[in-house]
Image (tube, rainbow, N blue to C red; front, side, top):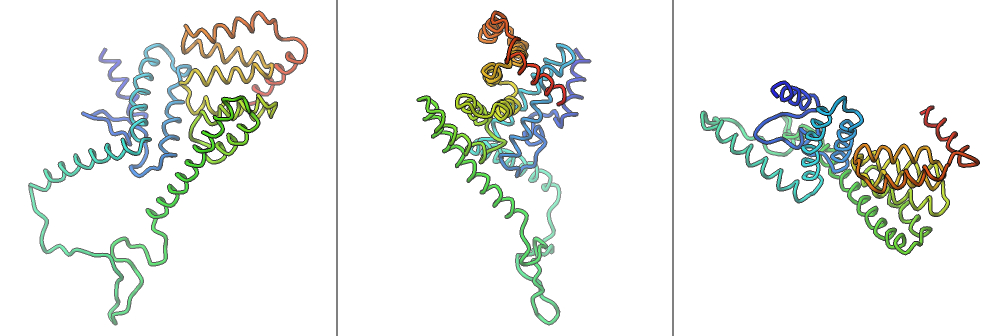
Length: 299
């Protein structure tokens, strides 16, 4: 038991974790405290991919990875929500202020320490030098903090556009008007290319239903699974994309992967049974299977 606990601590440290009375969510994800939403998501998905069950050497490591993922997910779900993040940041500031007050109680700051206020320096003749006295950034140069705010504002604007396009696309998707839905989903993925996995999945499904590019459909369905590797519905949908294209060998691989995650998944079992009974592998479908297999080996 002690050996396992030591390994858990070492693994946590290796991934940027640290153990204390409470985990620091920013350190868990290895991001700065002013990181925009896109960086939070990127950090979470990268860590989640590292903890994929297939990468575990044994059951102990698989259980350890599941514990790590739970901690990462808690941090991610807090920081991606603006309201929850603000509340969490306020708690952190409160603790920091308490610690600061405790440390300063042992000594006081000298009243002789000058307070530097914003403004411009002047030389011996009283002329302005054009240099800020607090930030040290010359007038006319861009403040990095302001630049970061502007970048985040642009990101939020694009995110909002993607959300609205996705809602509209889903309205058409539900009534089976896939051509109209495709137009809106294309706008969605163009404006939010690394964010919500369901955006990429719906775009892929529309491409298949409108006889669009199979390569592009598979690419976006794969991306959805990479962004959310623990969502079995996405994996099943990816398998369906390959199945619709007649690439049965790849579809079987995906359904088998679903069963590695959840051995009782009925849909994956049914899909595998139907594919087994179809006796695929001949004709054009068999040729397409071989082409995809060759492509996968090259990758």
